[in-house]
Length: 383
Image 1 (cartoon, one colour):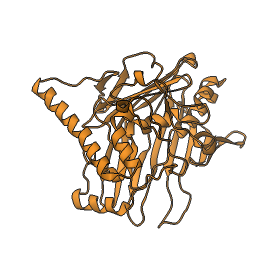
Image 2 (cartoon, rainbow, N blue to C red):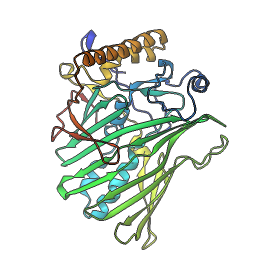
Image 3 (tube, helix red, strand yellow):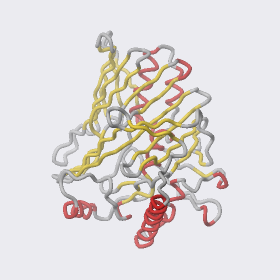
Image 4 (cartoon, rainbow, N blue to C red):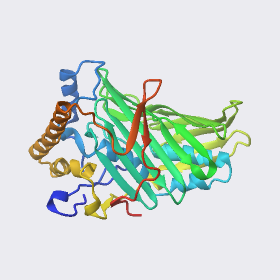
């Protein structure tokens, strides 16, 4: 935990989760079965869980915005520079596939981050990479991310719209929205989606990422298909967190490489032409030993910053003072309801500060950053 600045500007910033889905701080709920029983009692199968409010006992001390941001700025090696420095379109495409895999991070069964409030932001820098997130909608929950690296001339634009649903013995959260990675020096844009989160309660509890991810680059005519699986059965440890896929040419559908491995360990790539196998991703090298961000300048912290908005709740959780955390969370939520009532009384619509939001023809959400480049943040990740 990092606490800096004046009493009213005490931020709480914690380390990201490790490969094993754990941290130096024990975030596990004392009895995850309570959460299961609560869902069975209060939620009907097939229900949308986006409005479900969890008690702090089942929260980790950070917002979903922070978790989205950590998947970009919390890395032990600079994969983005490798994407940009690839000599050929194929080299760069493989590097982007590797980067996409690196953004998938472990989760802990029984606990979840806070649901961001409307207008909440998270602004962090790691070296030349500046990352800004904003919660652009509350119901439904939609998060937007914009990250730029002026040194590498790279830009990322994400739009996340998770839709968790309860199915009796499981919760399935599909993450709608596109992820764009732009390599400006090469005039290439890579478009991809996210895997979905599956939480099972029976016959044994577990939570992990599953489903298909597609990565496309129209300029190079290359595509990749990745399939995330968890094949453990009845609690036995099998080939968990496995990933399989391929890289192929869009126009001919010719497979160039086959991909397989485990995204929390190593992922290999086999050249279909000569049979050569290489390791393209090693999770220990990328998401091990990650450090918590620190506050560089409290005077530049926005009032909407996640680490500030939820600071009292997070301190309650970290100290296991559940009553304090409960009251602090109630205060945050009630303040948002009050602001909503004030806007309605003035017949005003809330407008995001950092993104322009629109709806696509397919019914999804699209978020476009207002600024060309993300400014340097007052919160930084130590290198």
